[in-house]
Length: 556
Image (cartoon, rainbow, N blue to C red):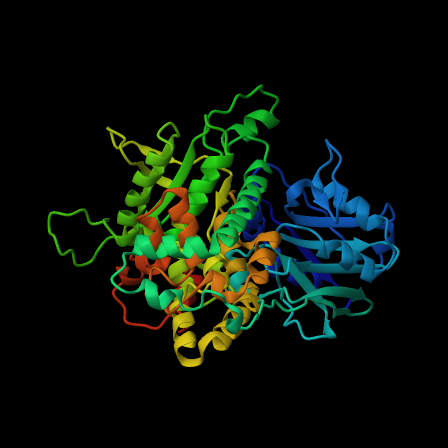
């Protein structure tokens, strides 16, 4: 939960112009919101002063988390931070290849810039899924030559308006060399994601669906699936529990409010929420909540952040304008969670956003965070996530309807579940047109492009509130486990919507005690929260969003 920025200019560049246009106060403020506890800045004059400034050794700018407390099987010593441990490991190797090999065995999200003294070069990049944002002003063509280079975790209105930024591709790591100009070179290519393509003819129970659909209830169908794939479902539960446990325990057990007090020297006993979940009440977020309940201390509360935008045409005039689909499913899932653990303090935070506030915050903050993403879909999802992650609303059941702001530093998200377990409507279309081989191809494509689509955007949005977004479904070991399973153990699109898609996860939800949530159909946040209808426009999600473009212009 921090931000990093590097600006390098050569002798041929206009240094003052670059620093004024790119590294402005807006950029500094954006980075400080990502990591509000501390910040520092080093100014480097390149190339004449390079050796003098860095004569003390190597430098690592690290924005990441090392989960399971180890790198490549070597455990981090107690009392040593993951960044200090990583810097030591990188210092102990000599070649670019060795540096890449160390980075590739890290389990967790990261983006980094590393200066290696003996090579006089910089290595930069992101984890293979692109879970942490890293932007630069380089089009990422191999061998690109620049007079100046900017690398940053996030962008402000000023930099988004004045410069062309790109996501650093997560498909490679990059090497930056210096001379009269700056040269960028690809140095490490990630292996593509591949699914177990075991032939469907080897599926012992291939015909089970035909028999199950004969006047059988959803509960009965899921029970039959569990009889066949109990081992696979249990394996998913075990590995997801480990993923969640590592992500929520990797923190100082202090909320956002108590961290500054602790840093000032106070002896703080924090009793506030430290973990939150972006919570629609859908399958993915509800499974995360139920599993988090199993590994989080019993006396700790869990915040469930549920966002809604006003209904334009209410069918029932007396109903609440924020009774959107995600609010209703959220409350339904809350009931199931309370039955599972009545003693847990579940803080269901109703985050209600009016149109005027949406327009104002998009213009002043959100458009810049979404940049360089620019579509209608980016706008809808980015805005909904920003308000949800802000965590400012009213707690359900609070008698005085008092305002509540979640103090949690960790926010769990369900990203990655749909891509791996065929949760999107397009997966069903591919299956209908080309059967299992076509579905496998689509799932592999989804995972190989996941870093390009939305994870960098999501990271910039959530981290703007000083919260650390963590994605249990994209844990390296979870991804590896699901990839090893034959596709037909995870999904069976011969079954109807709300059953066949992500059936392995639905069976896990059912087994955990979430029977109603287990059969909820997939509903994207832009439709479940009703943000897509808030401004009453007919447009396609893939179109460039003029609201984002205008917001960047108006924000100047």
